[in-house]
Image (cartoon, rainbow, N blue to C red; front, side):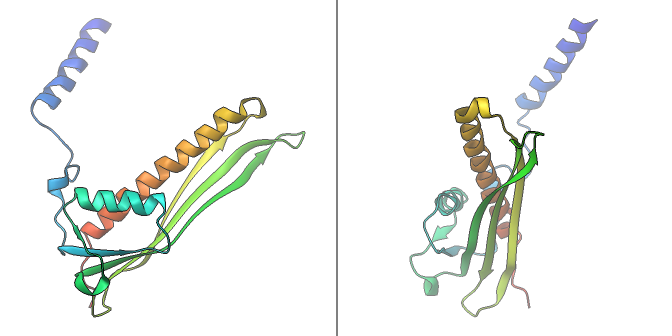
Length: 167
């Protein structure tokens, strides 16, 4: 009975992939922006900014070298990472950390009309910590921050996709 159920589930999954099923908005050609060109204004060239540039190019948004030649200016106001102690053991050792990744964005056109009011993307994760596995936990922390940064880029692209002038 279990083998029949597994075969049925496998067959259903294969039929979904064979028919070309994909989530709406998951393909680059599904994105339709209300602007054609964008200037990305950032205080520094961080990994988030680099990933955001790549995502914009993938979605066929023309990036301009100057703000006055672009239809829209996307300003990365700030980007922060924090690591806070979430819990301690009875002996005072760290058991868990709370990781926070925060990005603040704003989009406006040449007439200073806001398309996206200053918005904040806030992502958090919890990291269980063990003194016996320091290197592994450092790598896990770095991976969690990479995942949060990637998620923030995706959220920024989706917010730009729905951006319109606010009159």
